Length: 305
Image (cartoon, rainbow, N blue to C red; front, side, top):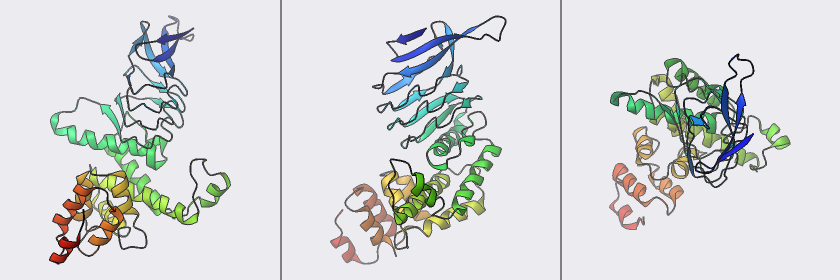
C-alpha cells in the first residue's frame, strides 16, 4: 500500500522482509512533492524503519536545496535525487550505503555531501573539506565508486580520489568528442572548441577544489595542480581557470587568494584577469587590486570597478 505524509511531502510504501523468519516490515520512500525545498527524511515512517530511498524518488524536485538522510537508510535507488537543479547540500551518517546509478545526476549546484560523524573541533576543518571533495565526485569526476560514505576521508579514499583526478588531467581535452557527437547529452551542445574548453574548465575546477581542500595532499600533486592552473590563466591560450574562478566561485575570496598565492594571478596578467571578470564581482576586483598592486598609479585612475 502507498502512503502519503503530508507534513513531509513524501510518499512511501511499507514492505516486508520475506526472507527473514520474523518478517520485519520496513519503509521505502517512493516519491515526493515537486515543490519541496528541503527535507529531513525521518528514520521511521508508520513505526517502520526507513531503509530505502526508491528509484527516482526525488527526481526533478527543482526547488530542493537540502536533504538529510538518516542512519536507517542502507540503499538509495537509481536517479533518486537526479535533476534537482538547486540541490546544494546533502547530509548523512557515516555508514555503508548501496548507491544506484546516477543518484545525483545533473545536480550541478551540489557542493557539499556532509558525513555526520563524531568529529571533534580539531577535525571539523577536515570534515568540511571532505564534504566538498565528496560532492565533486558526483558533479565533476564521473566516478560513482568514490561515492563511499563509509570510507570518505580515509587515507585510502583520498588516495583513490587523487588517482582519479590525475587520470582526468592525463586525458586529452578532446577525449570522447567523437562519442559526444554521435550521442551527446541533450542539454549539452558544443562544437569542437567549446568541447575542449568545457573539459578544461572541469579540470581547472577540480584543481582549485583539491588545492583549497588539501587534506593529505601530496606535494608533488600540489605542484601539478598549481601548474595546470598557471597554464590556464588569463593571457594563456586558454583562460579556463579564470572563467571557473569567476563563474563557479563568484565572490569566495579564498579561491582568489589561492590563485594569487600560486601565481596564476599576478601583476603581469592582472589587467587581463579584470577583463575576463567584466563588470562583475566588484569586491573581488578590489581585493585583487590590493594583492597585485600594479606599479602605475595611472592604472588606479583609469580602473572602474
